[in-house]
Amino acid sequence: MSGAQRMIPVAKPLLDEREVDAARRAIMSGWVTQGPEVAAFEREFASFVGAPYACAVSNCTTALHLALKAVGIQPGDEVVTVTHSFIATANAIRYCGGIPVFVDIEQGGYNIDPDLIAAAITSSTRAILCVHQLGMPCDLTRILEVAGSHGLPVIEDAACAIGSEIHLGGDWRKVGTPRADIACFSFHPRKVVTTGDGGMLTTADPDYDRKFRLWRQHGMSVSDTVRHGAREVIYESYPELGYNYRMTDVQAAIGREQLCRLPVIIERRRQLAEQYRNALGDIPGLATPVEPYWARSNWQSYCVRLPAAADQRSVMQALLDRGISTRRGVMNIHLEPAYADPNSFRRASSLKNSVAAQSGSIILPLYAQMTSEELSAVVEGLHEVLGRRQVAAARA
Image (cartoon, rainbow, N blue to C red):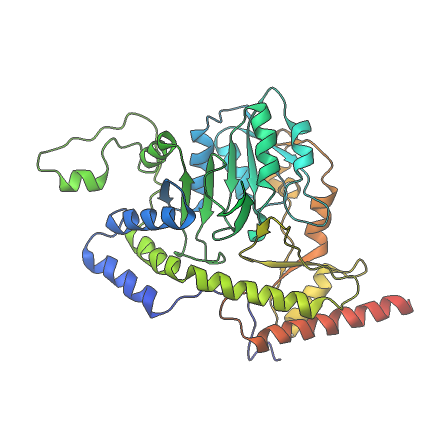
């Protein structure tokens, strides 16, 4: 395959004329920000997830910020989370003046190790922020047990996990069904559904939902929709500090179409993940991701562990030379320059599994429109690249 002729991307949003028509509908309505399309998207999202309340915002980072603010995170408060996540997870804690407390991920996986949480809790701990990394649900049952025994709220960073499922209380439930206090979702273009950018908070707590809606629009006491439909003059007030975290109606209209597609998208992604698992199992030393018996991933990303002798950058470059785009394993926040100040976080355990996952894994192409020919090209590329390198290593 020639990279100049065709490149297999690591991700590709599924968009067509249906989203174009939806955006046009919002534009032609004359109401293009936080109006009826946003309200409808919130209702439909809440119904899909199984949550009493859903509040749309500008992106998942702002969702995380509002969630942490809602549970009361203040300067100096500690929040137990992982370093093995996109930097926004910890940044949102710092927006509140809080201190991220990093614990390691499970060996062989990519999610927080529940066995390490209790030891990380101190008198300054105010919340647990768990991440459903790459769409694979973390062990929420065990996390909630620890949180409950210490009286701590749990926030789910579900940026990647729309449509993923967890077996809780004897039933399969979608991530975002309120067992934790708040869940935060992303609609970035690399996620399973997209609105271009955007986010959503789900909760069962009406007071949290009220706060989200107040804060997302500068703390304004009266919403635009209420003021627009009023038959008497209304003067709004701004009783507390708020933010411009609104979603537009154009985004929400696109999101509604994407939500209609979601079951088909997830079904296709699960088929592709199974094909990868079957096709890559005979590469010595390569480890494919595993679903725990209590989890169903939406396979937002397909991340594989490379053989011990393989160099991550060299493998990625060799695949890129063959027209196959990949990404390195999930970043570690504590290794970034923005966290060079030792006071910007607290390390509560060894982070060796997190570091090993970043440097020893790669994310392969996976998207709903991916053809069998494209998947075969990725598989063949991995066999060629890793097979050759392992032979060379054996000879050395």
